[in-house]
Length: 638
Image (cartoon, rainbow, N blue to C red; front, side, top):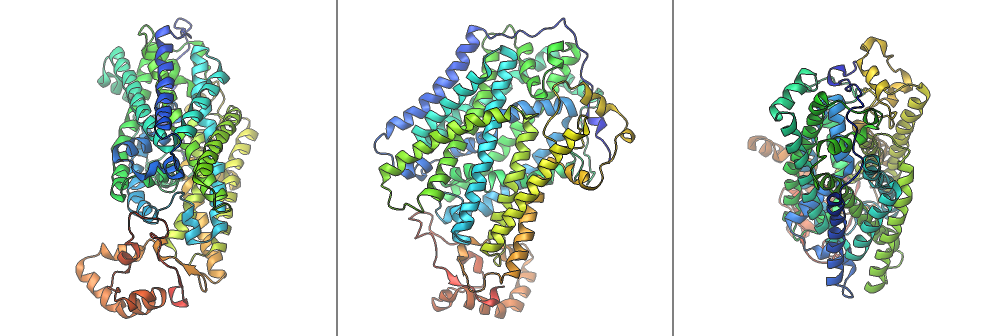
């Protein structure tokens, strides 16, 4: 296994002649505080507008009346957090531009949700994505999915809440835990009081601040080092511009295949089945608006990724001319960017504050989305099914209390996050470890009609066990080795604060690095393959258990919960092939449709293309109107 030495570069030598000014000016503090005040004001405005008249639908789904533009920016902001703003430039600075190929995964990672997940979720008129699991399987599967999601998001929120506060503390001396507390309280207040509409519109404002803050750093930084052309030349001379690494080895940290295809599964777990994103799709006025908002995220994601990469390259070129101080070389990788910003924008009042506001905008948007989605699934999946006669007033008040409760819980999780290493990899690893099995559970239900509830539960448990086995195993192995993990081991969570050891390790010839064997090789699986590996485990185990337990024979199956894969694939074939297949399978289709969809024969609705009929559902109306009657699936459907 080769080590990506060509994409790594030595850190500049320390110099004590360029110390960082660790203070904000008054203007910087004003800009930073203004962000918090305006975010809070937007949330309180939406809370005040409907105070006393809020229904549970308005609070959790913005009354399903949101337009395409705000939903698209909210989708972008939800996971474009301070984790990415800090982590991506640091990744590029240390290992080169190989990470940029993650952008290749965005196309399929957003196209599949737009044409597979959104139509099914929207037409079933859901509030929580996990309602789908009850419609497809049963209530036990729904509860298992909900609990898994809650676990995933609470842990992730600790990372997102802690990261910008740590960076701010490092370069300004601003109290770490006061910063965590301020961020958590502001976010909790406007999320709990204003509901999803407040969250979406604050996301719009915060997204614009994120774009502006990053753009300022790119413009000022490139101007100081001689322009973007010079930045590219310097990066090329020092081997930072990566080519397409076609090594198919999934144990190599970053290759084209790992980023472009392993990243697709990560994107699907985020934009396909994660409640924080599904909730935004469901808040759209129409299904078309939801699909368009998903399309709109694609170019925005590409722009954001390119901006993060440019900041990393500008930072590298800058520190070739202005060497780091001793204080900076001893900093954690995720503090590099803010140290660089304080160096770069020193003497320009207001701009350092703007970038810190950019960081906090990323955290606010992500945390508020998480609080709102956690409150939604708790209310809709764990409380209302057992207490269906709650009045609107009581349900609304309880939802606000739940959101406040999750805010306090995530404040506590921030302390645990303080024990983690580089936040970008840690955050993606958590999503892969927990989000992967959830993705597998939804895919098992949508694409495999024979999957049954026992198979779904056992498959989910198998996926979670496999995820934590590999994830925790990689941590323990890294700790026991007594050395810094090499770039090839992307599944490790921590790196030492002093990167000298890591730099030396990456510059060593590949022959001096021992090749992992046995379980250690499994533990070195690239973190970007976590979602693919774990979701596949769920599907394989789930199908095996389902078939061994009799499949769906004797059980009810709602046809609107199944995505018709085979008819969609046949539709891609030439017309002559479609006619031939239609003639050969016509009699079989008729017998199966008669068994599975008896009402279509009696109503004269059988027209050769079953998937269209299975998916024609009214876009509006109560949930029971958007769900067709279920039918007994006979042995022929297996």
